[in-house]
Image (cartoon, rainbow, N blue to C red; front, top):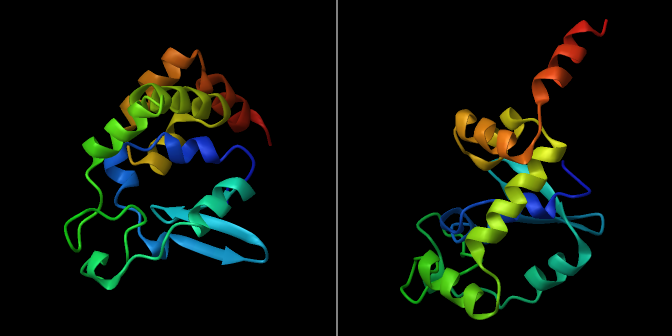
Length: 150
């Protein structure tokens, strides 16, 4: 489980992946709320956990074929919210999704190697390497030091 600064890692996901999150992605255990993305559980900060808990429970008509309700249900039964509509809503509230994702990606690459970010976010390793270069990180020295350590 990933703690601490994990919230920005969720926001580095593209909106197309965020709208696909279902209620089975959320798990509560010992006073914490976890959001699982690609089999990686992230501890949600209390404020975000409350926001998720305050969402209305999806009706069965908003469930996908596996029977799970989308966290962001769409207007059509069994479909998630349209990511373009979500981007418009976020932009209307002063939250440009693309800029936020780019910032989140840069922040994530300061703390974690590109290969880990590629796995967590489901992006190509070369894309993660390019982002790491833009972020000014050089993980090759860190990896060499780890190999030299007995």
